[in-house]
Length: 549
Ligand code: PHB
Image 1 (tube, protein in one colour):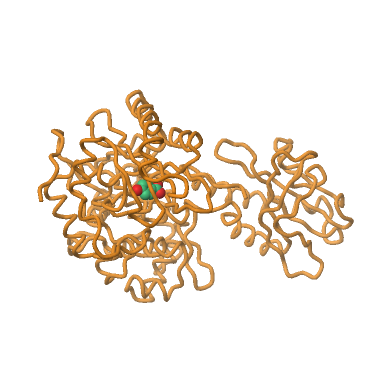
Image 2 (image 1 turned 120 degrees about the vertical axis):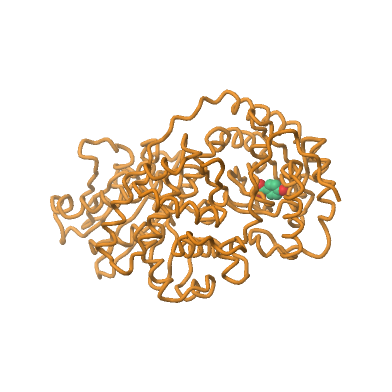
């Protein structure tokens, strides 16, 4: 077999073999995604920390300490110290025996997506196309011999498979795959063949059902056709019913595909041939607009580097001692040095942005290069799409109710009073609010409002905090208006643009607190919790949408 002729453009940097992010392979290979021994200068605790984050991601976000031990092959004491450190960095929450990924971990994937810039420029085009066609539209980039999604404009349907941002698929089982493979050089085809032989069931791609015997042997000819046609189809290669048509979005400077846009459907609505005949022309029009967007985009304004993280890690070490693995916390800050206008950094840039010593930053970069999370070229470094395997897929599908639940629980426990979060009901007249999350207390006399309850907005502190969020001190009180004996204080929760999208309250019995007491005793903690919720929400919604209910 011969490879398709690559376009006469500079060769791409060698890509690592497809990662095996949570395959049931021995820990040495599954944690590193790279069969080679780590270089002598690699930071072992950083390799272990990445293995724990990838294991949690593969498991959907939550694992007990003993499950983490089994999946990573690490000793229990090591797992405990790593999860304690990740809890300190805010990337996991310890809930009894479980370690749970938090929305904050999305700042790692956000660093990659911001540096890549494609989501900021193209997401709105993909969303508009999905609305126009009433079908799902995705954007994917090449990741070794796989494809990884960077955006999903998903239609909710009874019959639909939907992948998440950060999911990795084998190139040969998708429509974008042959469009990327059309550019592969012989070593890349060799790596692809080796992966197919080493992993005959696609165990390294947990997002897809196992590969059956045979099939996809025509990938070389599909890549050649894709190169000639400029589009490609997926006729149920992943699973029965799932069809897709894809077109590359070319980088204006190199002419190579920067990403691939796909329209995804189900055979109950469109056959693959039907997709080509009816939807491909509209996909092409949208891709033309996307390419114009890339051509006309102004160079990005470099965003601010992260705050002085090295100082913070030193303070944490003093506080937590042996349970804080400083080299892991420091190493993770290196990923956040990248971002919009900061896509290609030198060692000096990274050291300056993080406040780390050059030697420390250098060892972290060497470790990440070994793990396939960073590529190095001409003394500069860039993040790879694999950074999305650190938490992104499960968290990109979170809901507001799930995001706020641990915050409400902590606030209710702290004040020993029930708390709730509500949103306004669109189109309701008179205006109503609906409870979407509650945390109760074990007191005998407690407020018993369940998720889903609707109440008139003007009679509740929650409703008033939503309707008049700019009231001078920024909170609302309700005094026995709904029910005698019930007092409540609420504050708004705002989205990235500063718009109030929800309200958070604490309720109490009139016998326990006066209105003044509510302000003095509850408001500071209520505000702290609202801020913590906003921080999570703003991180999680930088490149994804979170449905309000
Ligand atoms: C998707 O976006 O879910 C998708 C795209 C291309 C495929 C399959 C699925 O070939």
